[in-house]
Length: 570
Ligand code: ADP
Ligand code: MG
Image (cartoon, rainbow, N blue to C red; front, side):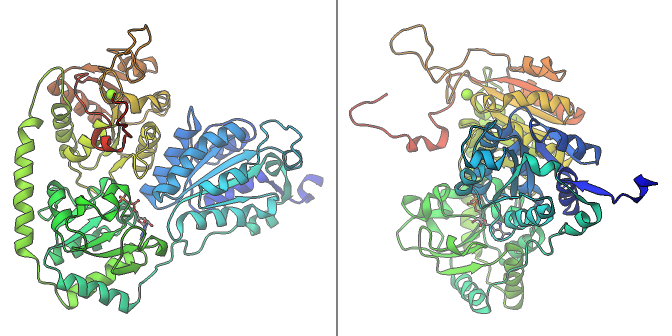
């Protein structure tokens, strides 16, 4: 018949879906609308997991953290102009954190946008995205979808990972082509993250430094967690006997309770170490730029740095032994090096570090046992610490000021890539996006520990969590405000201080509105029981944990970053 003889056709919608699936991308984090709604319907019909959010920034954050967790690009899809801009914040954040992510946005008609004739949601999205991400591409023809998606994937995961923008004008989706030709045009990316080994000279230079060290230290950053070289890293640490620090999102790469962990002796090791090996950690503000009083006597240290990005070397201080390569390969070579010619374990130094660690842990312990009501941060976090200890495979999402800084120090992590937090920018608003993706990508229960302010940036996604029935337990540390809940309007006027919220809010009722479980708790025992129950049941739960409004310090640990004037003192 005529129908059978007609050549089979495919279209832009189908080719985008086929190109992603061919490259093992099966989850999409999205906000629907013109021109991508049908694309999302079709993607779901074709078996993809399409997770639909209430705001693009949260969908984008979900994609970004999916990238960190899986080493594959997380994909976010948005509508044009405003939806694109909302997603762009997450793309920039992903790029800053070196998470592989692809933001795919629909866009309006090129002919009209480029002549600025006023199209629906007119915006030159490609130009705007470019400075905020690693790479940006636009696909105009259906036959280029295969190569365009392949480029985006390779750009996101190769070298230093980051965010990639892919612009898909509305007209692309409806373009039709021969199905067989279309299938042939698809590209499965070959070897997207090629192994990259440093030269023998570079390896020997680093090993010589380690051999000569009296007080060596290894610092693992989230790049080391991302690299998924967990066993090699553990062997290197244990064979070398060197103490280690783990940056926030690297916590759990080795258990925080590991005998060589210097986590609770951080200031001591940063000051005293003579050779510091950085593994996937940048010497940015989070490490005081590698200088200043945090780092002890000027010139007292030599640095080894392992990073895939050559430009990272010497960014703040001289790197004496740069090792440019991917962490899995470099650590494998270093491990072989010390197996062939063992280092003398720095036993005395390790003992000094351990003594300081035990002393600091003992100092902290009683504070964590406080069952005071209203709760302070330590009492509440002491309860959550137990919850994670009992469930080491759970994911922990964490944002806030005091809520973040104190949780990072108090809640021990036991497994790699389980702690997801505000990252390099120290940004608020990642919480619910990260929590959703953490549950979707891992299938494990998620505990999101949120300051009341931080939660507000993405709080509407509790509906998403309920809609997909995700095993997410949100704990809001509710101290009525930003940093504290005690600020007042100095004029005595009716407006509250910009730093406070409605006092004694019941965030738990938000969860109940969408069919989840809401719990209101006022002491650490209640908190422990409620969180344990939520983590075991897997039901979407929000626990409103009442914290003393006077607890907490301005900006948490980073109050010194606030500008102060000698003329005016608040
Ligand atoms: P942290 O904030 O935990 O200190 P950073 O984000 O500052 O971590 O540093 C992560 C570093 O890891 C980046 O410089 C990035 O280039 C690097 N990196 C990421 N993945 C890899 C990898 N597979 N191999 C080598 N380096 C990597
Ligand atoms: Mg608060």
